[in-house]
Image 1 (cartoon, rainbow, N blue to C red):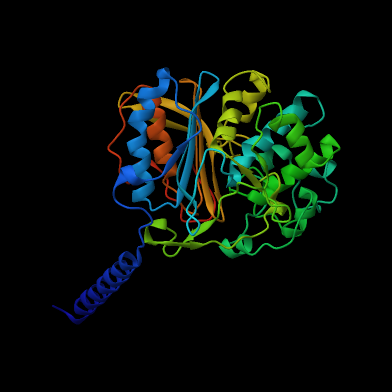
Image 2 (image 1 turned 30 degrees about the vertical axis):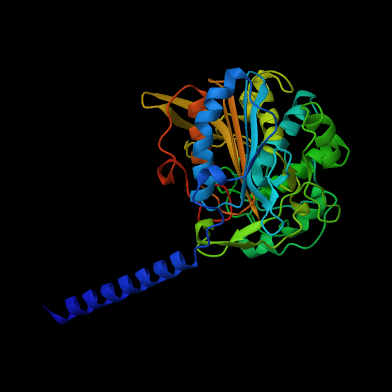
Length: 421
């Protein structure tokens, strides 16, 4: 064996030992929250399911219990909607570990970017009233946003193709301390930064871009963003448990928030999360809600109701870049295809929400008339989409895979932002 080959083998062996050492340390640090006895996992129902849905609920519960234990989640709440109503809502595990306070269907969770399709609905309301032009320069509505090398439109902001930067890393979000009464107050976080690229040429997820959308809504409506959202979106849809994530005026029934100790994965143990003030992200997030309220929102998006069908189609049609490539993202909605059984694909519209101390999965399946929402109170629980898809399969009358860690069916995120649900 020549010398270079010997050195390469030596370095590979050292690297392998290092990887194994780190992996062993991480596994040793793993602190299971729940007992392996799945039947011992605490859960609380909103109301017993009707006879029509009793069987799918009973088939789904083992998947949920196994998921909470295997993913080492402190607590999880879910809701499923069909036939225009919430047919199952249940909380599992603990909203607060120290106090052993249980998760209930009315426990409030941070829903992160699931706020984006809700803000998009407010945009749809303004469009239908003829008050907003999606392709007009955003400075026509928010003159306080500085002039850039290129003009930016509301449509480009909503599709994440405007070039407005995202927050740079975890710390930028985790240590937010300024309090904003309006999305306009949040512009100072990013407005002076140059655009990252010419609008329309690239897709780059940006919560700050949606903060600017919130400012457009506020300016166009002529009233505070949150007041408009409450009157025009939340109240008409019966979303009585959706409210601002406001540490100045904290909401009762809010869960405690947790963060993975290592490797951005709760299976290695969790700790208390830093509790930032995200109020400057109105339009992009900064909301507390329950899965039942999210499902009520999703059910209203399955057909004409709050918005006309053509407006919904506009919001849920993927944008194309200047190159002709699809972004697989509309105006506040991810669009994906997934198998509900081995022979049939279905179209799913939804969104994910990642936040300090929370992760949310929201899916609507118009062809089946199913809506699924799941929230948890720990960051980076990025496997929630796999569970959402499992529940959708069960309620569609199909078979689900064995309850286990389903890495193959979800997009594990390695950045503090949802790339898919």
